[in-house]
Length: 76
Image 1: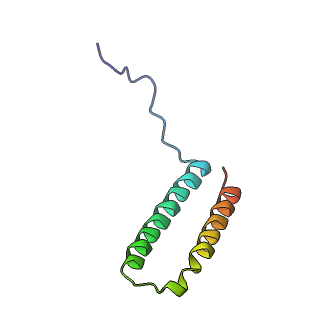
Image 2: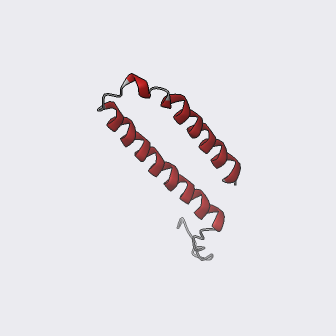
C-alpha cells in the first residue's frame, strides 16, 4: 500500500509578512550580538584609565534605554 496516494497536490510554502519581520528581527539581533561581542573583546585589550570609569553607568543607561525603545517599538 503506498504511503501517499497522490490525490492532493502539495501546497507551496508561503512566507508571510509576519514571518519576514520575525526573520529580520533575528538577523538584527544576531548582528547586534556579534558587534557587541567584538566590542567586549576589543575593550578588554585596552587599559582604561580610572578617570574614564564614570562612563560605565552612562553606557549602561544608554543600553537600557535602547532596549526599552526596541521592546516598545518592535513588538509583533
